[in-house]
Length: 442
Ligand SMILES: *Cc1c(COP(=O)(O)O)cnc(C)c1O
Image (cartoon, rainbow, N blue to C red; front, top):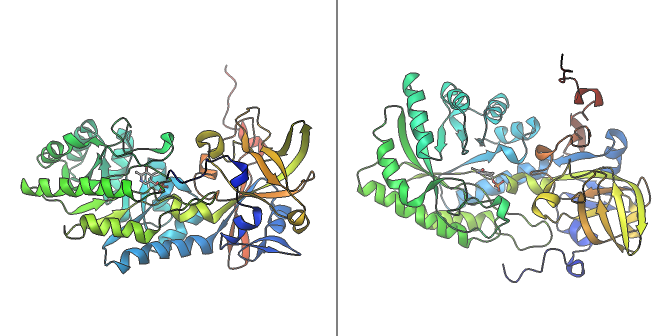
């Protein structure tokens, strides 16, 4: 990690052509401009307007299969539960459902969306620190495969609820292994100071207690140490601790049949070296291979992040020396990752003419009334004119799902690209619907 360049040093930024060359879904055509799986992104922007999200189904499918085969290659019995929160579009859920994936959900809404997309209840895992009574009831009535319990308090509440409904909840205890995944503070979840999971030191006693509760059937352990993890060492460390716990529980005569290894596998946004699913599979095998447990994982970003772009148009270019601001019609209300996590996203021109113009440094910003509404600083881009289109890359995960209507900006359209064809999978929100659920006070 220490060898990585600092995240915002423009002299080490990859060029637009490097960014495109590193992404199999993108190609530059000298006439049609930037293509996603053969479809000109300019044609999508013309028809659907901007800002618009575009997703490559081919990429999502290929990545799911690559992940599944990395597990199969090591003879790992590992189920993939797609982390719905990364991108909960029905088209995305239906695609993974069709591939045989289960779902990792973190709310009643996600649970129902996953069910509605055809994911069987038995393949749904429910995680999260604040499941309400109403949501736990829903999970029990749907009889989902596994509830990942994150505290002693939640375990007690779930046991009472399940018992009163005449059920036993299949529970994995989500353990906080106290490892630092080396990721952004806001997406680290596996350190002792993070709100997630049961403290490692308390887990064995709580598991033993769980086995005595009327509404609970403890089936195993779960962990999830963070998101956008770019090194395997934190996984190795966390899995080793979980494996130790499995052995300790069994020594005490407790049954442990499953280990849920969580998600978090990172992707290159800039040109960072990122670990492969094969590397993750090897870590899982090394820790759990001899334990005779059924394994599960909860990848989100790795499956969908690089499969999406956010298309935007240039509103104007504001000269305010020494700065040059390229102002887009997309803002932080669409893609919040740069504002929230200091995330770096590639930005490339869509038109063929723009692509060959010599680049000059500019800041790329949105129209929202916040200085944080900045996609990039000192970025080398061609001198884009008003109405020029750009694609903000790797926006398939934690993009549309985190959008808001801040500044009364309607939610953007979403487009599906599959086998050289494309279609709208979510219409741009109509302005009137921004206030249709509001009432003036009497
Ligand atoms: C967010 C989350 C995931 C997915 O994380 P990615 O970084 O998108 O892979 C998996 N499991 C849990 C419990 C989560 O909260």
